Amino acid sequence: MRIAITRFALPLLATAVTLGGCTAVKSTGDALFGPGKSDAQLTPRTGTYKDLINLPQPKGKILAAVYGFRDQTGQYKPAPNSSFSTAVTQGGASMLMDVLNESGWFIPLEREGLQNLLTERKIIRAGLNKPNAPANNNSPLPSLVAANILLEGGIVAYDTNIRTGGAGARYFGIGIDDQYRVDQVTVNLRAIDIRSGRILHSVLTSKTVYSKAISADVYRFIKFRRLLEMEAGTTTNEPAQLAMLSAMESAVIHLISEGIVSNSWALANPDEINNPILQYYLNESTYIM
Image: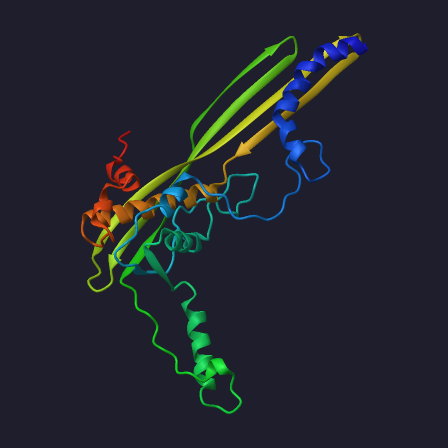
């Protein structure tokens, strides 16, 4: 029986090593398979982040206010997860503020937590010119900086299972299966002139969320009343929040590019309009289904 088990189990064991063995070597935990434990690190970014930080410099940074970037999809995660857990992140405004700051084109102003900021300013004013007041309470407060533009928008769509598929094979009780699923997230970002309320520019960007599952199994009678059953598999799900972050980065780059062409804002060096990144986003056409 030892020879038979070795003969039929080897293909599955080879598949299991391929699926999970590499991550097991890197694991800092005690598990045989899987990534194990890891330390905290900076959030990984996609290729749009590289484009964002390599944009040419502006003639002057734009003071921008963001009051919110809401989830407008109204979708919840499918059962059996939870009927109270939303399908997309509720921290869109925080993510957008980070994208604006990283772009080098905007000076984001705190507006989402404006009430907290005003409360702290009241505390400072209450302590002005009082005896034994802390040093940071002795100087008069300057006025808050006003924004040049208001950035509005939100996560407008999250479509699941827009594309699914797979393939598999089985021979003498030994099988392998590969399946994938594609979701899509869409965000809207618009720049509004605060003085007139006119929408200067508005963009819609979409990013796919890719999920893939690979599994292999053995279901084989080795001899009378001796059944060999083994299985292994791995699933990879692209984080939805990273897909949304990438869509926001793309939206900000498109917004900057359109504003340059429309003279809403300007480059420090006008010749940089031929920058490969700007040209790529300016020439990107809308896909017609």
